[in-house]
Amino acid sequence: MSYDSKTVKLLQYGILIFFAILMFFPIFWIFSNSLKTLNGVSEFPPQIFPSEPQWQNYIEVIRKSNALEYLKNSMILIVGNTIGTLLSSSIVAYPLARMEFKGKGVVFGMILATMMVPTVTLVIPQFLLFRTFGWLDSFLPMIVPSFFAYPYNVFLFRQFFKTIPKSIDESAMLDGCSRMQVFTKVIAPLAKPIFITVGVLSTIFWWNELFQPLIFIDSENLKPLTLGALNAFKIEGGQNQTAWNMQMAFAMIMAIPPMILYMFASKHLVTGIKTSGMKD
Amino acid sequence: MGKIFKGKREKKRQSFKDALTAYGFLSPWIIGFIFFTGGPILLSFILSLTRWNLLGQPRFVGFENYQQLLSGSSDFLNTLKITFLFTLLNVFVTVSASLFLAVLLNFKVRFIGIFQFFYFVPAVMPSVVMTSCFILMFNNQLGIVNYFLSTLGIIGPNWLGNANLVWVVVGIASVFTFSTGQMMLIFNSSLKEVPIELYEAAHLDGANAWHRFKNVTLPSISPILLFNTVVATVNSFNGAFTLLFPLTGGGPGNATKVLSLLIYEKAFKQFDMGTASTLAFIMFIIVAFISILQFKLSDDKVNYG
Image (cartoon, each protein chain N blue to C red):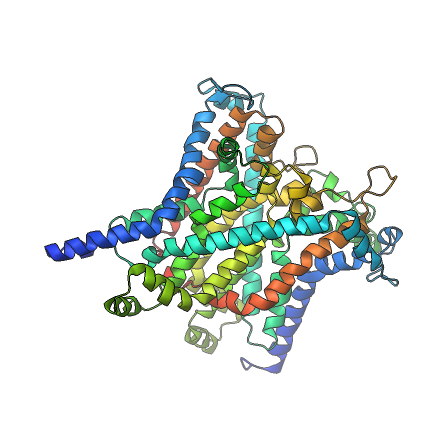
C-alpha cells in the first residue's frame, strides 16, 4: 500500500471527475437547453444535447431583450466598484498591517465587526439617505460607497500586506520616502496578487448582485443583467409561460464572462489569499 | 498594542506623528462607517420607533412595532424560524461543500487546474443564472430530475410547489453560490499550509484517508474552519435574498420567506418603513449576537492580530 500507488491515483481521478461532472452539469444543461427549440425543451425523454442546435436563439435573445444595454450597465457597476474598492480598501489596510499606533486594535476590531453586518439591515436608511441626495435611480448609490472601503476587502489586503517584510518600509523611509510613497511605490507593486484577487472577487460580486439594483434602479435603461434576467422570456401569445430556451440562452450569455475571467485570473486567485497570519 | 508608547519624549512625538498618518490612511473607512454602516444602524433603530409610509413625517409610536411583531397574530416568529432553518442549511451546505472540494483539489495528481476550473466556475455563476436552471431542472413536467425519477418508476413530485421538498432544491442551489467559491479558495490555500510531515507521520502510523483527514487536516485548519463558518453565516444572511428571490420568491406560500425577503416586501412593496426598520434592527441584533458568539468560541483558536 504505497502512498502513490496506481490504484490510489486512479481512484483520485475517478472521484475528481465524478464531482467535476456533478458541479458542471447545471451549466451544461443551460447550454444544452439554450440550443433547443421550445418543443425540444419539453421533449420526453430529454435530449442530452439537441440534435439540431438552434444557434439563432442567441441572436434572437440579443435582439429581443435589452441584453446589450443591461451588459453595459453591469460593466459600469463592476468598473466603478472595482476601482473604488481597490483604491480605498488597500489604503485603509496599509496602517492596519504595517504601522503601530494607538487605537489600532479597536479600529481593526470594528472593521471585523462591520464585516458581519448584512446589507439588508442597512438598506432602508441608505435608501433614505440617497433619496435626500437625489441619487435614486442612478448608479451612484451602488458605486460611491465602494470608495469608502469594504471591510472584507480591507481584511484580505491586510492579510497580504502582513506577509511583506517590515524592513522594506523602514529602508524606504530612510531613503526619504513618506508613508504614502512607501505605500504607492513599494508596497502596492509587491502586492499585485491581492489587487487581482480583490478585483476578481469584486467583479464576480457585482456581476451577481441583484438586491441593490432591485432597490435603487427603476428605469429600464439603467438595469444590469441580473435584473434583466428576472424579466422572464414569455412565449408569445402563451398564457404567461416561460420561453425556456430563450431564458437559458440569456443565462448562458451571463455565464460566459465569469468563465473567461476565471481562466485569466485563476493563477493569482490562490496566491493572493493569505491565511497564514490567522493562525497562532 | 501600545507597547511602543513607553519610551522617551522624542519617541512619543514620533508615535503621535505616526498615529496621525495612520488615521489619515484610515479616513475613507471612518467616513464610510459613519455614513454607510454606523449611521444607518442608528437610523434603523430610530425609524423602528415610528410609523411611516415614506410620505409626510414619520410618527413616533414607541415600541409599538416591536410589540406588534411579537404578538400572537403576526407571523414574525414563523419567519424567524424559517430564517434560522435557511441559515443552518445554507452554512452547513456551503462550508462542507467548499471544504470537500478543496480537499479534492489538494490531491497530488496532474491536471488539477482543470478540475479547479470545473469546481470553481459553477460557484461564481450569478445566482439568477443558476436559479433559473434549477427551476427548469426541478420543473414538475419538463424537469430532468423528475425524468430520472420516472425511469426508476417513481412519479416525480412538484419540488418547488411543496413546502418541504422546496428545501431540497434550496440546499442544492446553495452549493452553487459565491459563498462556496470564496471559501473554497480560502480552504484550498490553508490546506496547502498543513505541514506535509504530519501527513507522512500519520501515514507511517497506518492511518487511512479518513483518519488522516480527521486527525491531521481538521485540527490544522480548525481556525480557518471557524473563520469560514463566521463568513458563511454572514454570507448566508446577505445571500439569502439573491438566492431565494429568483428561486422561490419566498414560496410556496410563505415556506421560504426569510427575514430579508420580508424586509424587502415591507419596505419596498408595502412602504411600511416602521415595521421594515424594526425587522432590520432585530436582524442586526441577531447577527451581532451570532457573530459575538462565534468569535468568543473561536477566540482562543483564531488569532487575527
